[in-house]
Image (tube, helix red, strand yellow):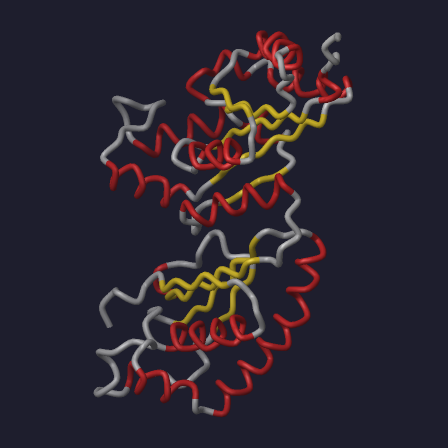
Length: 294
C-alpha cells in the first residue's frame, strides 16, 4: 500500500504575528488546542521546506501554525513573498496579527518586570515603536487583526478559536464601564456617554459608593432618562447583535462612560449586562475605573 501524497494545496497554514506582549503565546496555545502543529520563528527561506516535510510526514501534517517574531527581523523580510507563493499554490493561508494599545503594553511590561526584547537597554516605549516599524509589512498582510487591549487570556483564546474553527456561536459582548476623565478605551467598538444622567457624585451620602451598590444604582436607574436610555440600548443591541452573529464577529466591546467611571456608567453597564444575559447572550463585564477615588 502506498502512502497518500500530500502537498501545500492540502494544508491549512496560519501565520501568527503581533506586538510583543499582545498575546502571541496565548494565540499559539489556542491553535495547538485545535490540533495545529506549531512552530516559532522559522526563517522565511526555510518555510517552504518545512511545510513540504510536514506534508510528507506519516501521517501528513495538514494544519500548521507559524509564529513570527520581530526579534528575528532578518527572517521577516521574506515573509510577504512566502505568503504570496503559498496562496498561489492553493494552500489555505491566513495571517493573524495581534495588536495592543501602547499604554497597555507598557503597563504589562512594568507589572511583569520584563524588559522589551527590542530595547533591553532602553525604554519600553522605544522598543514598542521599533517593533511596530519592523512588523509594518507583516501587519499589512493580516487577514484578521485582534486588539487585545481589553481582552484577558481567556477572551483572546476564545476569539482565536472561534475565528479559526468557524464556530457559529453568538458574538460575545464585552461590556466595559469607564471614566472619560481617564480616557476612552482603545479597544471599544461602541462607546456610549451617560454623563447626562443624574450624578450620585453630588449626593454626599452616595458619593463614596459605586454603581454596584444598591442605593447608588437605584438613584441612577429610577430616573426617567435612565429608563429611556436602557430601552434604546436594548433596542439597538437587539438589532446589532444578530447582524454581528451573521458576520461571524467573535466579540463586540461596548464602552459605557461617565465622568469618573464609578457611578452612572457602572450602574448602566450592570443593568445592560443583566438584560443581555437574560436574552441568552454571553457577556463579559468589567469596570475599568471603579476603584479610582471619588
